[in-house]
Length: 288
Length: 288
Image (cartoon, rainbow over all chains, first blue to last red; front, side):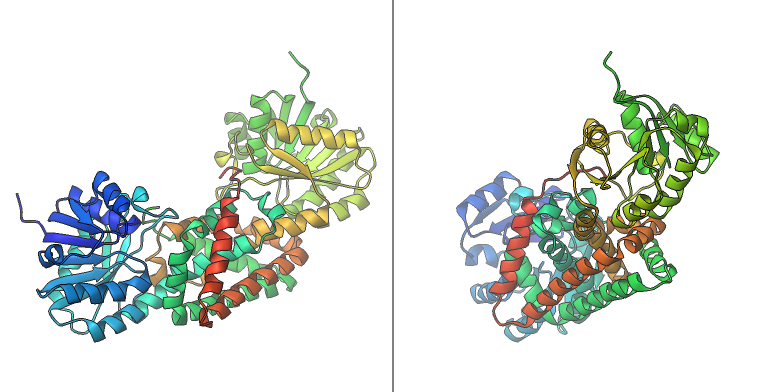
């Protein structure tokens, strides 16, 4: 048997992403052992039953953390820094730390100030998900074909970076490295603005219009079903880039509005054709 | 055998909607015969091969029209009035006329001026579709569960209205009657603004962001694949209501933008929760 990528992986947070990662790692034998931490006993039990972890408990424990060469924080954005601080306090060995949060700039600038140099941090953002949440919805194939964006600190070693990149590739993803600022700007366009647009479409439709909705509206607004608390954290921790991307989107909507009054129908037609052409080029990836 | 609802139905335009209606009518034996008109021989041949029509040709023919008790115009919005005028000129008998266009106010106000009283017009709008078009994509189950909105002229008889309502119910839809103005206002919210939002999301994302897109973005923007020429006609024939609905949507997006700067995170959270709750109430219907 070939040597696994990691000796022991500890996953803090056993929701959709943490649970799916645990399942994928165990199926592909990418670590000798996967340990999980969750807030409730029930979640730990379900994660074990679903094959997401070998073992787990509800409190971060120094013994388990101490034997891990990779710790993955798989919680919503605002918990990443406090948990990283706690993990640093409970350990004294060298290991790699990553997270899976959808925003990166704010997290990395805070972690740069608090993490000791023995901890190699790489930010991960697997662009995969579902409107469902929790380990019940976890799927070992969730990352297949998904873009997995890595962000590094100035001091992150190439060795650590390539091990985390390798992990995401081995669970089926396409890994790529972006600066935290660029990551936040691009995902604002392709994930955070679309989320708010879906919520806005639902909020802007009267109940009697919703009763008329067809499959198109249903597909368009499915992500409005996602966990509001997590999305609130995502939007707020990426507020600067999200505001810029929202302004661009609002500008585009105003352009459409202006073209409706224009006697020349070919301009709106041209934009709809361009959108169709670009959408055709979209490679469809990511679970959900 | 019970008497079918109609003797002969003529469908002008054998695309996704016309083709699906023909297939559904023939399967359920809702007419003794279904005749189809399309612009090309190839479409007529494909429609016959798919079981959407018993027979058909490429030019509106008085003989076939003359023996029809229902004529359905299943073309994009801007062709409805010219085709209705032609159908009126080629016939002299009493029959019911309907269309399936996504906008109603403009069409009905023009038809009121040109249709002779022997023709009973009822506007239909089955809220079902797909990003695909053409008779190749036709599906006899397309209307199952879909809202089918009927609009009437002041002179439309209740008998004609109830026959058309019955047709849509028998192919699986939920029929309801709305005034043309109310129809146009509600579908602007639930169909036309969402379409422009999907196009705007695609246009507002740089190619390098599109490369990161996950399943959520893909679902959200699928309708941007639909026929741009048809959607241009839909947007332009509903420009007044669409502008109002676009303004509301833009207002909602601006509200989100404002809340990102607010120190109080609970306001954005409250809106995301409300959107989730309303989206959960959405009954999912309509094909595609």
